[in-house]
Image (tube, rainbow, N blue to C red; front, side, top):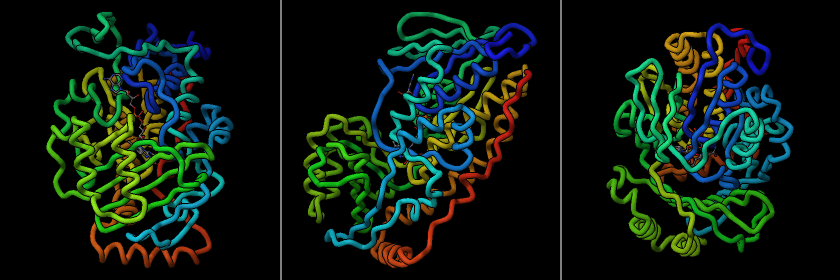
Length: 405
Ligand SMILES: Cc1cc2nc3c(=O)[nH]c(=O)nc-3n(C[C@H](O)[C@H](O)[C@H](O)COP(=O)(O)OP(=O)(O)OC[C@H]3O[C@@H](n4cnc5c(N)ncnc54)[C@H](O)[C@@H]3O)c2cc1C
Protein backbone atom coordinates (compact mmCIF):
# COMPACT_ATOMS: atom_id res chain seq x y z
CA UNK A 1 0.00 0.00 0.00
CA UNK A 2 1.16 3.52 -0.65
CA UNK A 3 1.08 6.24 2.04
CA UNK A 4 -2.37 7.22 0.83
CA UNK A 5 -3.71 3.71 0.67
CA UNK A 6 -3.31 3.32 -3.10
CA UNK A 7 -2.83 -0.18 -4.39
CA UNK A 8 0.21 -0.29 -6.60
CA UNK A 9 1.36 -2.82 -9.15
CA UNK A 10 4.96 -3.83 -8.56
CA UNK A 11 7.59 -2.53 -6.17
CA UNK A 12 7.65 1.07 -4.97
CA UNK A 13 9.24 3.42 -7.47
CA UNK A 14 12.29 5.28 -6.20
CA UNK A 15 12.74 8.81 -7.55
CA UNK A 16 15.59 11.26 -7.06
CA UNK A 17 14.66 14.93 -7.57
CA UNK A 18 17.51 17.42 -8.00
CA UNK A 19 16.66 20.91 -6.69
CA UNK A 20 14.57 22.13 -3.73
CA UNK A 21 13.10 25.48 -4.76
CA UNK A 22 9.60 25.47 -6.32
CA UNK A 23 9.36 22.63 -8.83
CA UNK A 24 11.35 20.16 -6.68
CA UNK A 25 9.30 20.18 -3.44
CA UNK A 26 6.01 20.46 -5.39
CA UNK A 27 6.96 17.42 -7.45
CA UNK A 28 8.08 15.56 -4.31
CA UNK A 29 4.64 16.19 -2.76
CA UNK A 30 2.73 14.79 -5.73
CA UNK A 31 5.13 11.87 -6.27
CA UNK A 32 4.65 10.90 -2.63
CA UNK A 33 0.90 11.04 -3.21
CA UNK A 34 1.49 8.72 -6.19
CA UNK A 35 3.18 6.22 -3.90
CA UNK A 36 6.81 6.84 -4.85
CA UNK A 37 9.75 6.84 -2.43
CA UNK A 38 11.23 10.28 -3.04
CA UNK A 39 14.65 11.75 -2.31
CA UNK A 40 15.38 15.44 -3.01
CA UNK A 41 18.97 16.62 -3.31
CA UNK A 42 19.71 20.36 -3.05
CA UNK A 43 23.14 21.83 -3.54
CA UNK A 44 22.55 24.69 -1.09
CA UNK A 45 23.18 23.84 2.56
CA UNK A 46 19.62 24.73 3.56
CA UNK A 47 16.38 25.89 2.03
CA UNK A 48 16.79 29.47 0.83
CA UNK A 49 14.23 31.82 2.37
CA UNK A 50 13.11 35.35 1.52
CA UNK A 51 13.96 36.72 -1.87
CA UNK A 52 12.14 38.49 -4.66
CA UNK A 53 8.40 38.00 -5.08
CA UNK A 54 6.95 35.52 -7.58
CA UNK A 55 3.39 35.08 -8.82
CA UNK A 56 0.95 32.19 -8.57
CA UNK A 57 -1.88 32.57 -11.03
CA UNK A 58 -4.50 30.74 -13.04
CA UNK A 59 -4.04 26.97 -13.26
CA UNK A 60 -1.26 27.07 -10.65
CA UNK A 61 -3.73 28.35 -8.06
CA UNK A 62 -5.67 25.12 -8.47
CA UNK A 63 -2.46 23.12 -7.90
CA UNK A 64 -1.75 24.84 -4.57
CA UNK A 65 -5.42 24.57 -3.59
CA UNK A 66 -5.26 20.79 -4.14
CA UNK A 67 -2.09 20.70 -2.02
CA UNK A 68 -4.02 22.36 0.83
CA UNK A 69 -1.58 25.29 1.08
CA UNK A 70 -3.77 28.07 -0.30
CA UNK A 71 -4.53 29.55 3.17
CA UNK A 72 -0.83 29.67 4.09
CA UNK A 73 0.01 31.28 0.77
CA UNK A 74 -2.73 33.86 1.27
CA UNK A 75 -1.11 34.74 4.60
CA UNK A 76 2.23 35.17 2.80
CA UNK A 77 0.69 37.25 -0.01
CA UNK A 78 2.75 40.40 -0.59
CA UNK A 79 -0.22 42.43 -1.78
CA UNK A 80 1.67 45.16 -3.60
CA UNK A 81 -0.47 48.26 -3.64
CA UNK A 82 0.88 50.05 -6.66
CA UNK A 83 3.34 50.05 -9.50
CA UNK A 84 4.63 53.52 -10.31
CA UNK A 85 6.33 54.23 -13.63
CA UNK A 86 8.89 57.03 -13.77
CA UNK A 87 10.43 58.75 -16.77
CA UNK A 88 14.15 59.27 -17.30
CA UNK A 89 14.17 62.36 -15.04
CA UNK A 90 12.24 60.61 -12.27
CA UNK A 91 8.88 62.25 -13.09
CA UNK A 92 5.79 60.10 -12.57
CA UNK A 93 4.20 58.66 -15.73
CA UNK A 94 1.51 56.54 -14.11
CA UNK A 95 0.75 54.76 -10.86
CA UNK A 96 -1.41 51.65 -11.25
CA UNK A 97 -2.52 48.53 -9.40
CA UNK A 98 0.16 45.95 -10.37
CA UNK A 99 -2.46 43.60 -11.84
CA UNK A 100 -3.40 46.24 -14.42
CA UNK A 101 -0.04 45.63 -16.06
CA UNK A 102 0.62 41.93 -15.46
CA UNK A 103 -2.94 40.91 -16.30
CA UNK A 104 -3.72 39.45 -12.91
CA UNK A 105 -7.01 38.76 -11.19
CA UNK A 106 -7.37 41.03 -8.18
CA UNK A 107 -8.23 39.09 -5.02
CA UNK A 108 -7.27 35.71 -6.50
CA UNK A 109 -3.73 35.82 -7.82
CA UNK A 110 -0.96 35.51 -5.29
CA UNK A 111 2.38 37.22 -5.06
CA UNK A 112 4.75 35.70 -2.50
CA UNK A 113 8.44 35.78 -1.87
CA UNK A 114 10.07 32.90 -3.71
CA UNK A 115 11.61 31.70 -0.45
CA UNK A 116 8.26 31.79 1.36
CA UNK A 117 6.71 29.66 -1.37
CA UNK A 118 9.64 27.22 -1.18
CA UNK A 119 9.31 27.01 2.62
CA UNK A 120 5.55 26.39 2.48
CA UNK A 121 6.03 23.67 -0.15
CA UNK A 122 8.87 22.13 1.85
CA UNK A 123 6.78 22.08 5.03
CA UNK A 124 4.15 19.93 3.29
CA UNK A 125 6.64 17.18 2.36
CA UNK A 126 9.57 17.27 4.73
CA UNK A 127 8.18 14.46 6.94
CA UNK A 128 7.41 12.19 3.98
CA UNK A 129 10.37 12.74 1.73
CA UNK A 130 14.12 12.43 2.22
CA UNK A 131 16.01 15.72 1.74
CA UNK A 132 19.76 15.82 1.17
CA UNK A 133 20.98 19.40 1.55
CA UNK A 134 24.49 20.50 0.67
CA UNK A 135 24.93 17.80 -1.93
CA UNK A 136 24.40 17.33 -5.65
CA UNK A 137 24.59 14.75 -8.41
CA UNK A 138 28.11 14.18 -9.67
CA UNK A 139 27.48 11.47 -12.28
CA UNK A 140 24.50 9.54 -13.61
CA UNK A 141 25.07 6.05 -14.98
CA UNK A 142 22.08 4.97 -17.04
CA UNK A 143 23.48 1.66 -18.28
CA UNK A 144 21.62 -0.63 -15.84
CA UNK A 145 17.94 -1.21 -15.03
CA UNK A 146 17.87 1.88 -12.82
CA UNK A 147 20.12 4.92 -12.62
CA UNK A 148 23.28 4.68 -10.56
CA UNK A 149 23.94 8.08 -9.03
CA UNK A 150 27.25 9.20 -7.60
CA UNK A 151 26.87 12.29 -5.41
CA UNK A 152 29.47 14.97 -4.85
CA UNK A 153 29.60 13.93 -1.19
CA UNK A 154 30.75 10.47 -2.21
CA UNK A 155 27.49 8.65 -1.46
CA UNK A 156 26.21 6.31 -4.16
CA UNK A 157 22.60 5.23 -4.66
CA UNK A 158 20.43 3.67 -7.36
CA UNK A 159 17.01 5.10 -8.33
CA UNK A 160 14.33 4.09 -10.80
CA UNK A 161 13.99 7.68 -12.06
CA UNK A 162 15.85 10.98 -11.77
CA UNK A 163 14.11 14.35 -12.27
CA UNK A 164 16.00 17.60 -12.77
CA UNK A 165 14.26 20.47 -10.94
CA UNK A 166 17.51 22.39 -10.78
CA UNK A 167 16.49 25.60 -12.52
CA UNK A 168 17.38 27.59 -15.62
CA UNK A 169 21.03 26.52 -15.63
CA UNK A 170 20.20 22.89 -14.86
CA UNK A 171 23.16 20.55 -14.41
CA UNK A 172 20.81 17.60 -14.99
CA UNK A 173 19.89 19.02 -18.40
CA UNK A 174 23.54 19.49 -19.25
CA UNK A 175 24.41 15.92 -18.24
CA UNK A 176 21.50 14.54 -20.24
CA UNK A 177 21.16 16.75 -23.29
CA UNK A 178 24.44 18.66 -23.53
CA UNK A 179 25.33 22.37 -23.27
CA UNK A 180 22.68 24.95 -22.37
CA UNK A 181 23.38 27.13 -25.46
CA UNK A 182 21.34 24.78 -27.68
CA UNK A 183 18.21 25.45 -25.64
CA UNK A 184 18.74 28.97 -24.33
CA UNK A 185 16.92 31.71 -26.22
CA UNK A 186 18.50 35.05 -25.36
CA UNK A 187 15.84 37.76 -25.18
CA UNK A 188 18.08 40.80 -25.58
CA UNK A 189 18.38 41.94 -21.95
CA UNK A 190 20.70 41.50 -18.99
CA UNK A 191 19.74 42.13 -15.40
CA UNK A 192 21.27 42.55 -11.96
CA UNK A 193 19.26 41.90 -8.79
CA UNK A 194 20.39 42.72 -5.26
CA UNK A 195 19.00 43.98 -1.98
CA UNK A 196 19.58 47.37 -0.43
CA UNK A 197 18.35 49.21 2.66
CA UNK A 198 14.90 50.79 2.32
CA UNK A 199 15.95 54.40 2.71
CA UNK A 200 13.45 55.40 0.02
CA UNK A 201 10.34 55.29 2.23
CA UNK A 202 8.66 52.68 0.02
CA UNK A 203 6.07 50.24 1.33
CA UNK A 204 4.45 47.29 -0.51
CA UNK A 205 4.98 48.83 -3.92
CA UNK A 206 7.16 48.80 -7.00
CA UNK A 207 8.77 51.84 -8.59
CA UNK A 208 10.05 51.39 -12.14
CA UNK A 209 12.32 53.95 -13.81
CA UNK A 210 12.78 53.78 -17.60
CA UNK A 211 15.02 55.31 -20.20
CA UNK A 212 15.24 53.76 -23.69
CA UNK A 213 16.87 50.35 -23.26
CA UNK A 214 17.42 50.79 -19.52
CA UNK A 215 15.30 50.23 -16.44
CA UNK A 216 15.77 50.40 -12.70
CA UNK A 217 13.19 48.99 -10.30
CA UNK A 218 12.81 49.14 -6.55
CA UNK A 219 10.55 46.54 -5.02
CA UNK A 220 9.32 47.01 -1.44
CA UNK A 221 7.98 43.58 -0.54
CA UNK A 222 6.64 44.55 2.86
CA UNK A 223 6.97 47.37 5.32
CA UNK A 224 10.42 46.14 6.31
CA UNK A 225 13.84 47.67 5.91
CA UNK A 226 14.88 45.89 2.75
CA UNK A 227 14.29 46.61 -0.94
CA UNK A 228 14.87 44.36 -3.93
CA UNK A 229 16.57 46.31 -6.69
CA UNK A 230 16.63 45.39 -10.39
CA UNK A 231 18.83 47.04 -12.99
CA UNK A 232 17.95 45.78 -16.46
CA UNK A 233 19.40 46.83 -19.80
CA UNK A 234 19.00 46.00 -23.46
CA UNK A 235 21.94 44.44 -25.24
CA UNK A 236 21.47 42.88 -28.68
CA UNK A 237 24.14 40.24 -28.09
CA UNK A 238 24.70 38.48 -24.76
CA UNK A 239 27.89 39.38 -22.87
CA UNK A 240 30.84 37.03 -23.15
CA UNK A 241 30.51 33.93 -21.00
CA UNK A 242 33.41 35.06 -18.82
CA UNK A 243 31.46 38.19 -17.83
CA UNK A 244 28.58 36.02 -16.69
CA UNK A 245 30.85 34.32 -14.19
CA UNK A 246 32.88 37.24 -12.80
CA UNK A 247 31.04 39.53 -10.32
CA UNK A 248 33.66 42.26 -10.76
CA UNK A 249 33.11 42.34 -14.53
CA UNK A 250 29.33 42.26 -13.99
CA UNK A 251 29.46 45.27 -11.65
CA UNK A 252 31.62 47.24 -14.10
CA UNK A 253 29.32 46.40 -16.99
CA UNK A 254 26.18 47.53 -15.15
CA UNK A 255 27.89 50.69 -13.85
CA UNK A 256 29.06 51.60 -17.38
CA UNK A 257 25.58 51.10 -18.88
CA UNK A 258 23.90 53.27 -16.22
CA UNK A 259 26.58 56.00 -16.03
CA UNK A 260 24.93 59.44 -16.15
CA UNK A 261 21.39 58.10 -15.62
CA UNK A 262 18.90 60.19 -13.64
CA UNK A 263 16.61 59.67 -10.63
CA UNK A 264 18.08 57.42 -7.91
CA UNK A 265 20.00 55.26 -10.36
CA UNK A 266 23.45 56.45 -9.14
CA UNK A 267 22.46 55.44 -5.58
CA UNK A 268 21.31 52.04 -6.84
CA UNK A 269 24.54 51.50 -8.76
CA UNK A 270 26.49 52.43 -5.62
CA UNK A 271 24.45 49.93 -3.58
CA UNK A 272 25.05 47.26 -6.23
CA UNK A 273 28.79 47.74 -5.82
CA UNK A 274 28.47 47.02 -2.07
CA UNK A 275 25.82 44.27 -2.32
CA UNK A 276 26.89 40.83 -1.13
CA UNK A 277 23.92 39.12 -2.81
CA UNK A 278 24.28 40.42 -6.37
CA UNK A 279 22.71 38.10 -8.94
CA UNK A 280 23.51 38.90 -12.57
CA UNK A 281 22.18 36.99 -15.56
CA UNK A 282 20.86 37.34 -19.07
CA UNK A 283 17.11 37.33 -19.65
CA UNK A 284 16.27 34.20 -21.59
CA UNK A 285 14.05 31.22 -22.03
CA UNK A 286 14.72 27.51 -22.16
CA UNK A 287 13.09 25.85 -25.15
CA UNK A 288 13.61 22.14 -25.66
CA UNK A 289 12.14 19.67 -28.15
CA UNK A 290 11.88 17.03 -25.38
CA UNK A 291 11.88 17.13 -21.60
CA UNK A 292 12.98 13.57 -20.96
CA UNK A 293 15.44 10.95 -22.07
CA UNK A 294 15.25 7.38 -20.82
CA UNK A 295 14.70 7.40 -17.06
CA UNK A 296 15.52 11.08 -16.60
CA UNK A 297 13.14 14.03 -17.04
CA UNK A 298 13.16 17.77 -16.38
CA UNK A 299 10.57 19.95 -14.65
CA UNK A 300 10.12 23.70 -14.02
CA UNK A 301 12.72 26.19 -15.21
CA UNK A 302 15.11 23.34 -16.07
CA UNK A 303 12.69 22.21 -18.80
CA UNK A 304 11.05 25.44 -19.92
CA UNK A 305 12.10 28.62 -18.08
CA UNK A 306 9.82 31.36 -19.46
CA UNK A 307 11.89 34.33 -18.10
CA UNK A 308 10.73 36.83 -15.51
CA UNK A 309 9.27 38.96 -18.33
CA UNK A 310 6.30 36.58 -18.30
CA UNK A 311 5.94 36.43 -14.50
CA UNK A 312 4.92 32.79 -15.02
CA UNK A 313 8.03 30.84 -13.97
CA UNK A 314 6.69 29.69 -10.61
CA UNK A 315 3.23 28.94 -11.95
CA UNK A 316 4.67 26.81 -14.76
CA UNK A 317 6.89 25.01 -12.24
CA UNK A 318 3.90 24.18 -10.00
CA UNK A 319 1.70 23.03 -12.87
CA UNK A 320 4.54 21.05 -14.47
CA UNK A 321 5.24 19.25 -11.19
CA UNK A 322 1.59 18.25 -10.86
CA UNK A 323 1.34 17.06 -14.46
CA UNK A 324 4.58 15.05 -14.30
CA UNK A 325 3.64 13.30 -11.06
CA UNK A 326 0.12 12.70 -12.36
CA UNK A 327 1.49 11.10 -15.53
CA UNK A 328 3.75 8.85 -13.45
CA UNK A 329 0.85 7.94 -11.17
CA UNK A 330 -1.24 6.96 -14.18
CA UNK A 331 1.46 5.03 -16.05
CA UNK A 332 3.62 2.33 -14.53
CA UNK A 333 5.78 2.58 -17.65
CA UNK A 334 7.92 5.70 -17.29
CA UNK A 335 8.33 6.11 -21.07
CA UNK A 336 4.56 6.36 -21.48
CA UNK A 337 4.38 8.66 -18.45
CA UNK A 338 7.01 11.08 -19.77
CA UNK A 339 5.31 11.11 -23.19
CA UNK A 340 1.95 11.95 -21.57
CA UNK A 341 3.59 14.69 -19.45
CA UNK A 342 5.03 16.37 -22.55
CA UNK A 343 1.86 15.91 -24.59
CA UNK A 344 -0.43 17.41 -21.96
CA UNK A 345 1.79 20.29 -20.78
CA UNK A 346 3.50 21.52 -23.94
CA UNK A 347 0.75 23.82 -25.27
CA UNK A 348 0.35 25.51 -21.86
CA UNK A 349 4.08 26.16 -21.68
CA UNK A 350 4.21 27.52 -25.22
CA UNK A 351 1.34 29.95 -24.57
CA UNK A 352 2.98 31.24 -21.41
CA UNK A 353 6.42 31.58 -22.94
CA UNK A 354 4.78 33.71 -25.65
CA UNK A 355 3.78 36.29 -23.00
CA UNK A 356 7.36 37.49 -23.07
CA UNK A 357 6.75 39.94 -25.92
CA UNK A 358 4.06 41.76 -23.99
CA UNK A 359 6.23 41.85 -20.84
CA UNK A 360 9.24 43.26 -22.67
CA UNK A 361 7.23 45.94 -24.46
CA UNK A 362 5.56 47.02 -21.22
CA UNK A 363 8.44 46.91 -18.78
CA UNK A 364 11.55 47.52 -20.88
CA UNK A 365 11.01 49.45 -24.13
CA UNK A 366 14.30 49.66 -25.99
CA UNK A 367 13.81 52.79 -28.13
CA UNK A 368 12.63 56.35 -27.36
CA UNK A 369 9.62 55.84 -29.64
CA UNK A 370 8.63 52.54 -28.01
CA UNK A 371 8.96 54.16 -24.61
CA UNK A 372 6.71 57.07 -25.65
CA UNK A 373 4.10 54.63 -26.92
CA UNK A 374 4.32 52.60 -23.73
CA UNK A 375 3.88 55.71 -21.60
CA UNK A 376 0.86 56.82 -23.65
CA UNK A 377 -0.66 53.37 -23.17
CA UNK A 378 -0.03 53.51 -19.41
CA UNK A 379 -1.67 56.92 -19.07
CA UNK A 380 -4.70 55.43 -20.83
CA UNK A 381 -4.78 52.43 -18.50
CA UNK A 382 -5.51 54.62 -15.50
CA UNK A 383 -9.01 55.15 -16.80
CA UNK A 384 -9.73 51.49 -17.53
CA UNK A 385 -12.14 49.86 -15.07
CA UNK A 386 -9.97 46.84 -14.26
CA UNK A 387 -7.53 44.46 -15.86
CA UNK A 388 -8.50 41.02 -17.01
CA UNK A 389 -6.51 37.83 -16.66
CA UNK A 390 -4.38 36.64 -19.54
CA UNK A 391 -5.91 33.50 -21.12
CA UNK A 392 -2.50 31.79 -21.03
CA UNK A 393 -2.49 31.79 -17.20
CA UNK A 394 -5.50 29.45 -17.09
CA UNK A 395 -5.11 27.71 -20.44
CA UNK A 396 -4.75 24.28 -18.88
CA UNK A 397 -7.65 22.66 -17.04
CA UNK A 398 -6.04 20.53 -14.38
CA UNK A 399 -7.04 16.86 -14.65
CA UNK A 400 -7.97 14.96 -11.47
CA UNK A 401 -4.91 13.44 -9.82
CA UNK A 402 -4.98 9.71 -10.65
CA UNK A 403 -5.92 7.53 -7.70
CA UNK A 404 -4.74 4.25 -9.18
CA UNK A 405 -1.50 3.59 -10.99
C1 LIG B 1 15.32 37.95 -10.65
C2 LIG B 1 14.18 37.04 -10.92
C3 LIG B 1 12.89 37.50 -10.85
C4 LIG B 1 11.82 36.64 -11.06
N1 LIG B 1 10.55 37.12 -10.98
C5 LIG B 1 9.52 36.25 -11.13
C6 LIG B 1 8.16 36.70 -11.03
O1 LIG B 1 7.88 37.88 -10.82
N2 LIG B 1 7.17 35.79 -11.15
C7 LIG B 1 7.42 34.46 -11.37
O2 LIG B 1 6.50 33.65 -11.42
N3 LIG B 1 8.68 34.02 -11.51
C8 LIG B 1 9.73 34.88 -11.40
N4 LIG B 1 11.01 34.43 -11.55
C9 LIG B 1 11.22 33.04 -11.94
C10 LIG B 1 11.09 32.07 -10.81
O3 LIG B 1 11.98 32.38 -9.78
C11 LIG B 1 11.40 30.70 -11.38
O4 LIG B 1 10.69 30.50 -12.57
C12 LIG B 1 10.99 29.62 -10.42
O5 LIG B 1 11.68 29.80 -9.21
C13 LIG B 1 11.31 28.26 -11.03
O6 LIG B 1 11.39 27.30 -10.04
P1 LIG B 1 12.32 26.02 -10.21
O7 LIG B 1 12.11 25.24 -8.94
O8 LIG B 1 12.06 25.36 -11.51
O9 LIG B 1 13.82 26.56 -10.32
P2 LIG B 1 14.67 27.47 -9.31
O10 LIG B 1 13.82 28.32 -8.47
O11 LIG B 1 15.74 28.11 -10.11
O12 LIG B 1 15.34 26.39 -8.33
C14 LIG B 1 16.37 25.53 -8.69
C15 LIG B 1 16.89 24.87 -7.42
O13 LIG B 1 17.86 23.88 -7.77
C16 LIG B 1 19.01 24.06 -6.99
N5 LIG B 1 20.13 23.57 -7.78
C17 LIG B 1 20.72 24.17 -8.84
N6 LIG B 1 21.69 23.37 -9.33
C18 LIG B 1 21.67 22.24 -8.58
C19 LIG B 1 22.43 21.05 -8.61
N7 LIG B 1 23.39 20.85 -9.53
N8 LIG B 1 22.16 20.08 -7.70
C20 LIG B 1 21.18 20.27 -6.76
N9 LIG B 1 20.45 21.40 -6.68
C21 LIG B 1 20.69 22.36 -7.59
C22 LIG B 1 19.08 25.55 -6.70
O14 LIG B 1 19.86 25.83 -5.57
C23 LIG B 1 17.60 25.86 -6.48
O15 LIG B 1 17.21 25.61 -5.16
C24 LIG B 1 12.08 35.28 -11.36
C25 LIG B 1 13.40 34.81 -11.44
C26 LIG B 1 14.45 35.67 -11.23
C27 LIG B 1 15.87 35.14 -11.30
